[in-house]
Length: 247
Image 1: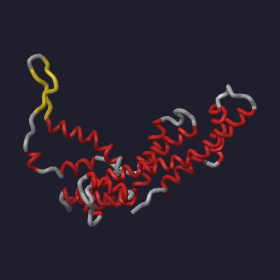
Image 2 (image 1 turned 45 degrees about the vertical axis):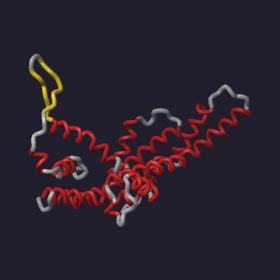
Image 3 (image 1 turned 180 degrees about the vertical axis):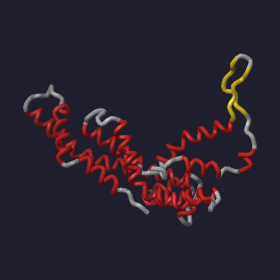
Image 4 (image 1 turned 90 degrees about the vertical axis):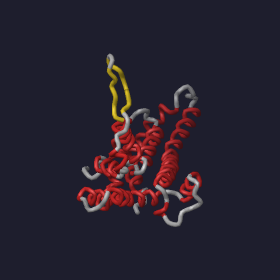
């Protein structure tokens, strides 16, 4: 998973900063005092640390992770199993599935921008644009035109002549909104069979006069049995992976 690492991306992004800004020493920021001496940290180091902290969230918001983790969370809620599978298991499954879906895009990004930058054949800014091109193509393949127009208007633009003119922040915002809508649409379809089981169990219990027994407690084994019999995990994971349109 070397190619999917964050280190080349961080080096490439930091190297694209203006050289004058890097050369100029930023003022130190006092964070504590020990006796008569102040403990300070360079503001430049603080900004780099903040960027490294936020980079994983930004990158996950531009990949398939959002749709996958929301669908898996809604599936767990539909099954009514509480915290089973645990959050760690769902996050692990979502991350592995994200790498599976995004690997062709990451490979194209590596070959187009990061590898030439590390070899010294491309300057940092051109390498960053080339590395982002496959990711932009992936986001354009998922985004809805209505969402893109909405965020373009919020950014103060009346439209763009070509996809290359769409700013990254507009595209990323529209992509994330489209992914949220798609994830909830898939979650709604997953809820339907389990809601039907809950309604049938509740009707049977009411007809038997067992109104004090919780329908959720009785229907939970039947929902798990149905999910296992149809090999639900393979169906959900396969459908999720196939729901993404690759450029």
